[in-house]
Image (cartoon, rainbow, N blue to C red):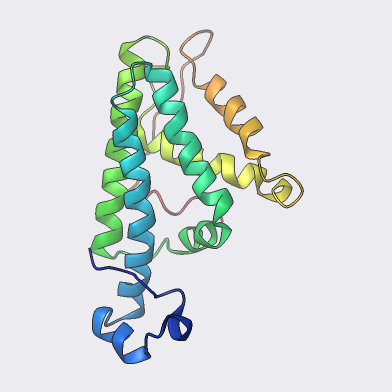
Amino acid sequence: MRPVLGVAGGARAGIGKGTVFRHFPTKEDLFAAIISEEIDGLVTVGRQQADQADADAALLQFMSAGVELYANNRALAEALRMVSDVRHPEIQAGQEQLIATAESLARRAQRDGSLRADLNGQDVMLLICGVYYTAAPLLAADPSAWRRYLRLTFDGMCATGTGPLPPALVHNSLLPTIR
């Protein structure tokens, strides 16, 4: 991945338009680099959580990091919501890594018997988005409001006392979340 250093700062960072366009020939390439950097950070969190002894805590921490990423960078959340038609290979590769990371954490919790067996990595990623969008209207008043909705969602993911889910829809993009 190409470095995104100074992109957000533009002229303030002393970087001219020509420099940006040499690194990012299209707006889609620039956008993909910014989005991919954030996705890579979340994948890294998930991979670090894979080493945690408590599978539930690892999955919850990964989900927390995802919702917190959106809550702290609402422009990113809005940009991700709007990119449903972007099929940039870098973004698609990042999405696949995110789903695989979420899948790995979910499978581990399922093996421990704590997470319902019919959840998958895509479900986890969409639930992260859903928690953010549920709490979004409250974040100006309480930036941590999302924690309540994440707890409610996570508790609903438990293996005990649940009925079967309808079949999962496998979609080629996890980014078109809520419109």
